[in-house]
Image (tube, rainbow, N blue to C red):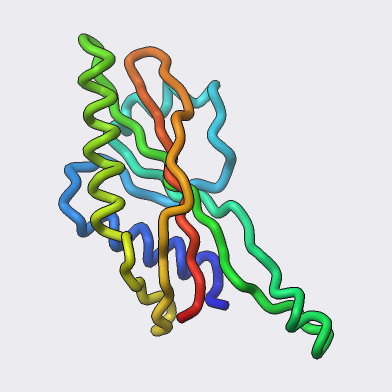
Length: 144
């Protein structure tokens, strides 16, 4: 499997070039924390990419005692803000989430010159505070 940093970079590059009107697209090293909302407000609209973990290939581990990887999950935190209308901020998030689905659904990304499948696992609401709405979409990346 390709290195996590290279996959993150490929996702960030794809999202940055998708024309979604974002202020910030970047890797995000920590879990989303409620106390960071004031910092995130100035970044909105944004997509932050966070590595969630991997699924180990148990068959390979038992066959040759090495650790194979079936897939790796990445959560893309999507934020939009509106100080006048919550529904406006939600529409902003929905537009970005729809753009991500269009960008990645059934597609292949290239990381470290290796083609990788990417697919949506789930989307979920994260928080609403101070005019900022945050949703997240988890995508699974796996070898062809």
